Image (cartoon, rainbow, N blue to C red; front, side, top):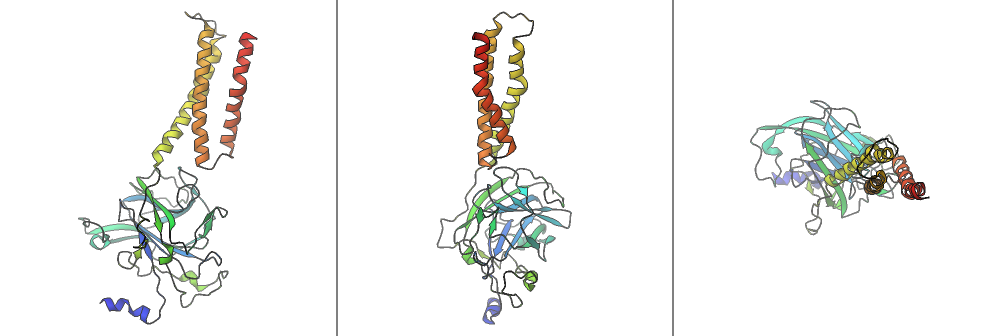
Length: 354
């Protein structure tokens, strides 16, 4: 009976308020979150997260932040037919996130792969349940002890924020079945973002918890708010009904970035592997052509330089979007292309007309 659900509260027992949300395109994927009331920016503490998804999903991800660049991310995929891998990663832009060992996570009981009844697994907003009687689901229950800040403090989450951004993504397909934290993943099928009201997620201190945020031996290590938790019946919406503007919103599609990356690689490879050598060899080779070699050499050089500049522009855009302008590849590219643009035309002019 419903009044029995109120009994723990009436008795003053600790009860966590767990918020949850799902991608609009796949309600079988559920993200759940709760934050102890003692966890604040001034007194950092743990947060608790659950990610569940059917094993027909190859991988599923959740990220703290409004975009991939600078996001603190968690990827869930299978490591075997009975186990899962939860990989903490850093978002570098519209590319595969990289594994980071800086995120302090602890896996909690209930993590793994289980078979559940599909009629009870369907979300309340699903039009109809699956025709199968059972469905295999992978679940990650975990605690993160340093997820209020990440990437050297460039990312921050305030538990009192009523409009905090999360991003999500997933891909369906053959299970990855890897225990490696840095396993390669394929591009997502869908991704999006949502503004979450963190003030709705609260967890009173547990009876055996210590209050010291610096205590590494606290019995809160065994606290599991997802014990006997059913996200379909025990969670509350991640958004306040009075704030309809915080609906799920799409993020930029990675297809654009992939096309730019391919364009950069293609243009630069054609320029330096084919057209620059061809243009350089055209003049000294002892061959006869129906037109002057110079009249062919100069337009070819100009065309190749324009192709190089186009590829260079794609590369700079990618480096800027991913925050990698100060890494070796972009720096070397800037130097090489800068020398070509500044000195090669001048040297060619002096050679032929000087």
